[in-house]
Image 1 (tube, rainbow, N blue to C red):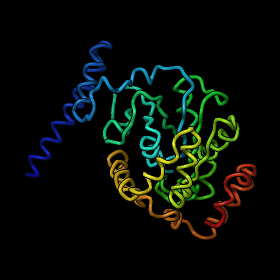
Image 2: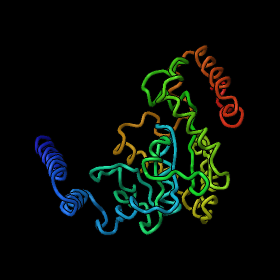
Image 3: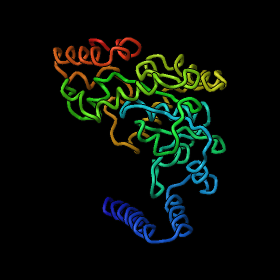
Image 4: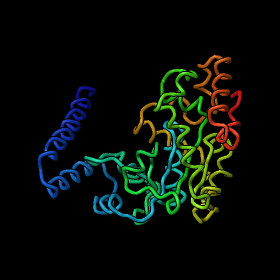
Amino acid sequence: MKILQVTKLSLFYGLCFFITVLTCALDVPQKEMLQNLQLQSKKILKVDELPLAYWYNQHIPKTYLLSYPRSGNTWMRYCIECLLQRPTLEYRQGMIAKHNCPLGFWWDLGTDFSKDPVWKVHDKGWMRRMGTLDPQAETLILIVRNYKEAITRHMRRPLHTSMLKQGHVKVYFDNLLLYEAWNPAKRLLIYYEDLLSQPEKTLKQLVAFFNGDVDEVNAFMLEITKHKKKCVDIYVDYEGPSLTQGKYLIYHSHQIEDEERKNIDTYVAETYPLLWQKYLNRYADM
């Protein structure tokens, strides 16, 4: 039985690889046909109900869901699709894959594909690849997680003060600087810790920001345990194992020595005094 399952899985991935090779040499209509064929191998809805070409080519002001990696982006996407029915997806060039599609394409979340999408991004570079970045007209949701937690988890090793000068780590603070410069009427900041510890209050802020029906949150909260379990399953399928499964606010930073945590806080406070004062001092000694 196990051999048969492995064989089927190998055939599936072999087909995906074969499709990928073919699409590199074919014209656009043939590429689209083969890409749609690949989507059909694991789809819930008809491909023509998923307006990927329209989403990718539309030039209306976009809505971005920005976060440093490992900061609760998948859970926020899940909540947006359930509560606002807006599709969420990533901007990835090349062959259509599950990361390009809304969560509601693969799982039944009540997503309305006729609504404008919310774009998952991790830095300003991602946003610029999608076209003209307009902080005055476009909408920004920023998720902020304790930098000692998010960076340690993403880097898979304890954060150290010396690492804070590295470009891929500085992205964490660059995202906050971008938020600070954004049109205040078009931005919303959500703390990862608030999303976990005060989900009802935080989700109502999200829904109200988009002029949605906050009563939807009340119904959502009645089944919050089921929703979290479903989202963890989605995360595992997309990204791999979840170490905390959204249960712990402090987990990864336990790997950092106490004295080094204080050194990190001091560095952040001195290097980014505005960000520290307005957004980050809640993480002192955490």
